[in-house]
Amino acid sequence: MMRGVIICWCVVICMAAHGEHGGDIEITRVFGPEVPGRYKHPASITELANGDLYLAYYGGDGEYGENTMVSGAQLAKGKSEWTAPKVIADTPFRSEGNPVVWQAPDGLVWLFYVVRHGDTWSNSRIKAKISKDNAETWSDSFMLAYEEGMMVRSQPIVLNNGDYLLPIYHETGHDREFVGPDTTSLFLRCDSKTADWTETNRITSRLGNLQPAVVQLSPEHLVCYCRRGGGYDPKTKGYIVRSESWDGGRTWCEGKETEFPNPNAAVAFTKLHNGHLMLVYNDSMVRRTPLTVAISTDNDKTYSYRRNIIEGKGPYAYPYAIQTKDGKIHVIFTSHDRSVINHAVFEESDILEWKGE
Image (cartoon, rainbow, N blue to C red; front, side, top):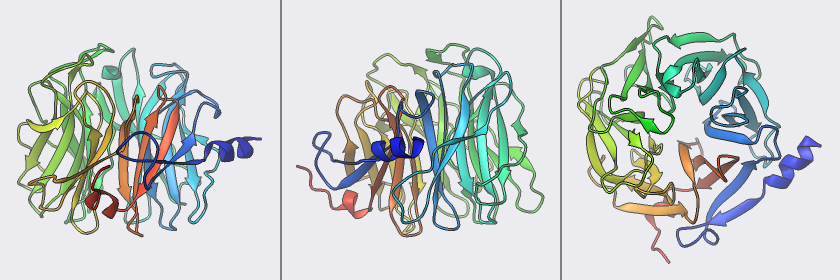
């Protein structure tokens, strides 16, 4: 029965920059309310060594539900049907959130996720698991960050020296409707020789910032883009926050507001195979719509190529982006009051050559 239901929902909808329907970017509805646990939020995706895609999300009765857990599903290479999701992290008497799934160069698949120990995300800590068999089975969980308020959202990167850099953030405020101005982004660095994780300094900014996404431009120069802090009410001055490191990601500058509007929503930022940079964000200060892709071909100086991959009432939020070995770009995001996970697939040329309608 579950197989039939999933096939039913995995229909391809083509959406483009001018209205919800029409165009050449494929957006597939992966899972919706038909899969147990109506709430499904923010999803992450990785390409496994065998070419399969693996997706992880957390779900349950709601964002602050006491029964939330992390589930995973797999899409075999060349297939169109995702496996039925199965629970891969569920801490007794606690609620999970924000899973990040990622396969490292040595073949280990990492699952980073949040465990909430109180009423708000400011009570969270970061846990992790690993898989040695392409996400078929998982290790016991272990604590990665003990400090209250530590959270994860974006994928790690492998630095030029082989170290891993995991974007994390420290959320404050203890208010479900307001992110404190002392909320900061930072990184956990895993030494490739010792496997020890250490923290960087913290990135401060005017409204606070969180959920950093990072790329390495050169051995010493790294850039990250972050969601702004504050409330969820409409703003006339709410922008994505940017920070830089000039020592290989060990220390970071104060966060500066960019030209990109931000309605207190997550962004995705990744380096493509050809060195171009891709930022995915909600191009609005008021609503989490449209969902826009911007590409820089000049090493983060300008983002001249932009396209809304979906627009309309929304919200279309919490993008997570990867580029697979075949060059295709995959963006996962949620919609329908966080009850539906969507999967967009396109080529870089669909953004670079877009002329509008």
